Length: 169
Image (cartoon, rainbow, N blue to C red; front, top):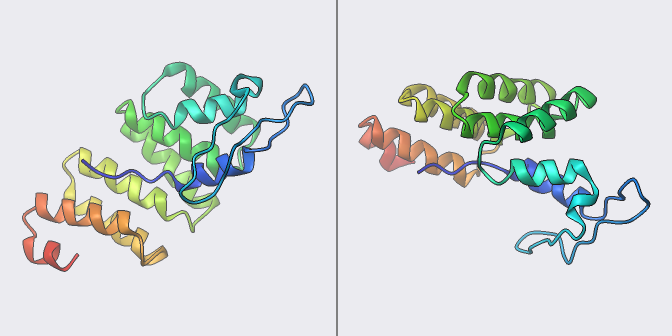
């Protein structure tokens, strides 16, 4: 079981915590920040928020894919929507589409180490452990304290019987 990175989405949710809907209402949030849970009131008021929350659920839903594609078309330079779309594709086992979206995220925001982690997870799920390890290392090149990257690299190294390397991870 790999750990998937969702930090860019969490940051985006914090931005949306007090996002006005088209009717002049404000979406409410009890608290935001590390270790707190955010309750979005009137979630159905803003379709972007509803789509982002549905995408983060971890399930593949063709309707969510359609809505995320529309958001990507509206905001092609926003890596957050592409990141979420890539995740939904990955959960649906559309690995090529997921990979391409994560690559676009990295073109737009090279510091998004979470995209490298999730690309590594795609490779891991396809049994390509060497490629997975390389992606986890790329994540660590960007963020050398990523527990997710270390943990997943350990799993990939163990799966590929690189036990000495796994012990160092």
